[in-house]
Amino acid sequence: MSTGTPRVLPADSGIDEAAAVLRAGGLVAFPTETVYGLGANALDARAAARIFEAKARPSFDPLISHLADAADLPALVGAVPPAVAALVERFWPGPLTLIVDRPAAIPPIVTSGLETMAVRVPDEPAARALIAAAGVPVAAPSANRFGQLSPTRAEHVVAGLGAAVDVVLDGGPTRCGIESTIVDARGERPVVLRLGALPVEALVEAIGPVDVRQGSSGQPVAPGTLAAHYAPRTPLRVGTAAERDGGRQGFLAFREAPADGDWAAVEVLSPDGDLTAAAARLFDALHRLDAAGVTGIVAEPVPDEGVGRAINDRLRRAAATWR
Ligand code: TXA
Ligand code: MG
Image (cartoon, rainbow, N blue to C red; front, side, top):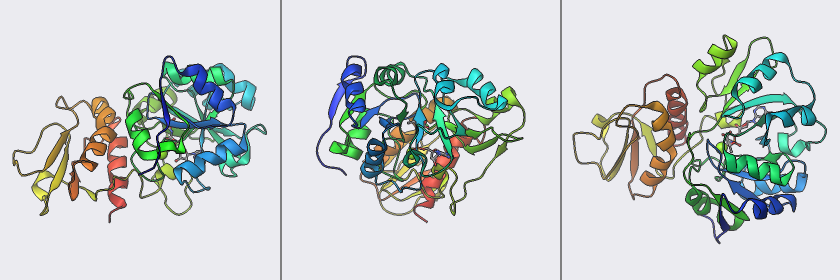
């Protein structure tokens, strides 16, 4: 998809070199607990501009800034509303992105001109070590070309972005496998802008009722919520194994492979029916089906609870691209 090869360094020994690349205005792909991020110095408008170029990302789609530690938040943005502080306290480091006011230090290109900023502290030692060594907040979207499958392995980044990225830190497969949950808790009632690895149920338990915004494609507040997104190159639809079309078809199963053996490729997300394990495998399984030479993919929905809601959300958006 992209030409050339980036430098790939092991996540443990490559930190200092990768941090130097970030400080010099370069792009470093790095593992987080959710997906691989495509990082640049968030204080440097030209470095951030390179992210949009490398991903072919529309300039209206703002980036998430990543910090090494929750204690770094006040220094960057000052005081935050109590509900935001409570979520920081409870869930950082972790797969939760929070909306705060954009501080003057963050150039508008990072937030696509919004006066708000998305920020999180990833729960992945290599990511935190990298950000700490760079000594700056790191703006990072998922390290894939815009609209395509998110990367959960360094190989996915190399195949998708090639030499558009300077360095890839390889930390192996990511733990959660699905992006962070995005919450705007500045108002009276917190709003989930994007379903993600932190289940809605965990938020409700911590802070009470929340609203869940269904994706709007017109004026996207969180364009990860665009109706069509996260798409494989192969046409995908959500359905059951009873609905196979002609040709070489691939099937994405939740717990078990279909009894009918005529599928050209089958991926099973979790034989135990564990939604967390299924989320961790989702994008990897879709990357493999995409590479299997099939003409279509049928993906079975999973139970719509916990992180299963975020999985079904990703499947629906992948399918929307092909309608
Ligand atoms: O798990 C994750 O969040 C990963 C890792 C790398 O941290 N990052 C990620 O970034 O998923 P990306 O760019 O693929 O998705 C970021 C989402 C987009 O939907 C964007 O619209 C939304 O965050 N976003 C960023 N800033 C925002 C803001 N100020 N208000 C609302 N949404 C915002
Ligand atoms: Mg993304």
